[in-house]
Amino acid sequence: MQNDRSLRRKILHLALLSFFSLVAALIIHFFSVQEKDLEEKQRKAFEEVLRLKEERLHKTLEMVLRDREVNLPPIYIYRELEPELFQEEGLTVYLYRNDSLIFWSNNNVPADNIYNGKLFSRSFINFGNGWFRIIVSEKGNLKAIGLILIKNDFPYQNEYLVNDFQKDFNFPPDAGIDTVPGRINIQAQSGEFLFSINHEKTHHHSAVSNFTVFGLLIICFISLILLLFYL
Image 1 (cartoon, rainbow, N blue to C red):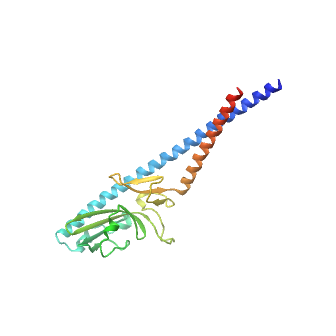
Image 2: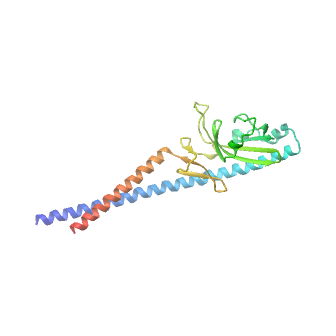
Image 3: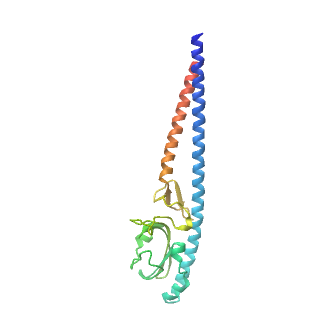
């Protein structure tokens, strides 16, 4: 009789352990999926803003090339560009003729006097004090280079210099940027991978969640094996 009670108690404990470990694994997995859904929404919102900026920059580069094609002096280009193009939208424009710089839209981003084909052949670069999406448009001996500020990247920060994302992206400044695929992968309209955005805390939390779910499923599996043994 005592052995029967002990056996029933073991079976009950194993059944409860198996049940609760499975439930816990499912709950953690559910919240992990919710987190991934949130990241997907963040990616889509980020890319929507980027598309608008790309279209805006394409039109600006076409205007710059058109003006220089009819030999209008650079002062006319300045007049056509909005004065707050960089401060408000994070856009910068360079114009090269025969690979020599003849126009730049602002002094916030350094401009090389000689066209750097190796640098501007990439779609996304770390340049000056920031991360930039690059768009190049050419016509004859003219090359118009457009830069879209994604995030500031100052070597030192203070109350005036902050490594935050360009304000239109509305993304938390603690997120980092990498040139290899990561948590949130941002692509060009063509589907080309540009960069990834990673929350360090989120990445750590995801790894812990995956490990915890795996451990709980192992416990559930072992409990079921033992439960079948005692039945």
